[in-house]
Image 1: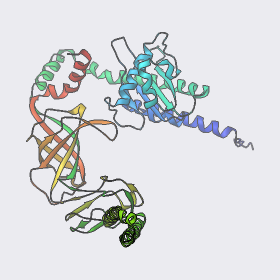
Image 2: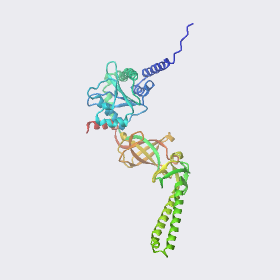
Image 3: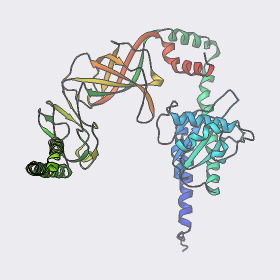
Image 4: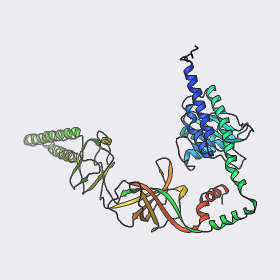
Length: 455
C-alpha cells in the first residue's frame, strides 16, 4: 500500500504561500460588487505580500483628469480632503504624466517626483514604495496600487503583486459589466419616463442637512491648572467624582520645596546674627558700623526668600476652587509626571450644565445660523432622539484626530434630560436652509466642479 510523503521543512513555507494565493483568488472570484473587490485589493493582499500601507487609485487619464484615491488599507472611508490623500493624488498625477512614464510596475523613489512635491515624501511616505497598475488582458488600465513598507521590494514580491493585479483587473471589469447590465432590462418605450421622474424628484423642496459626530461636554467648566512647576506625587481624587470646595485634588513631590524652605530659614537666622554682630561691633569700630545697612538689606532679602519658599510650599497640595464633578483622564496619566505652570490638568463642572459639541466636517459644511435646529442621537440611548438648538458655529476649521478638518458647532438641548451624562457621544443631524433635493445630492460634485473650473 502506497503512502503519501510528508512535506519537508523547506516545502512548508511554499505550500502555505500557495494556499494563501489560492484562498485570495477564491475571494476575488466570490466578490459581488466592485466596491467589495476594491476593499479586498488593499486589505487582503497583505496575506501574500507584507506591507504597511496600500492605496488603490483610479487610472490616470488625460491631462485634464486627475487620479483619485478609491480605497486605503485599514480605512473604511477615505477623506479626500486629508493632506496625505491630496499629496498622494498630486504625486501620482505627476508621475503618470512625467516624460517616459509607462504603465508597468515600478519602484518609486523621491527623485522621480517634481521638486515641489519632494518635501511631502518625508512627511507622508513610510519606507519604500511600489507602484503597480491593474491592467486587464485587453490592455485596459482599471486602477493602480500604491504600496508602502519599511524594507526594500524584492523581485519575487513584485512578481506576485503583478500576478494578483491581473486577477483583480479581470474580476473588476467583469463586475463592472454586470452592474451595467441592468439598463438593458428596461424597455425602450419607458426610457423617457426616467429623466422625467428624476427631474421631478430633484425639484422636491427639503431642508438641507448634514450629519456629524457629537459629544456631550461640560458647560463653562472651571479649569484646574498647575500652580507651580514640579512633579505630581499623587492624585487624591478619582476621576468623575463629586468634590466640594477645598477638597484636596493632587499633591506635588515636595522634597525640593521643603528643603528650600529649611535652607531659607537657616539663611535668615545667619543674616540676623550677622546684623546683630555688626550693630554691636559698630559702637567701637566706625568701619563695622558702616556695614549695618548692608546687613539689614541682606536680612530683608532672606526674609523675602523665606516668604517665597513658604508660598511655594503652601501650593504643594492643590485644592478644588469650587464644588462640582471632577473631570480628568486617569490617575496613572498624572502620577510621576512633570508639569509646568498653567498646564491644564483637571476640570470641575456642574453635571447639570451641559452643552453639545458637534464636529462638522468641512466636506459636509452647510450654512448654519444661531438658532438652527439639530437632532441628536446618542449611542447610550440608541432608541431616542433629542432636539437641540445651535448657539455657536466657529468660523475657522480645526484639524481633529484622524486628520479630519472640521468646524466646531456648539448646541444646547431644547429640553434638559437628567439621564444625559458628560462624555456621551453619538451623531447629530443639523439642519440649514430649505432647498431642492438636487442641491443636497449634488452639493459635493458642484463644489468639486467649481474648484476644478475655478468659477
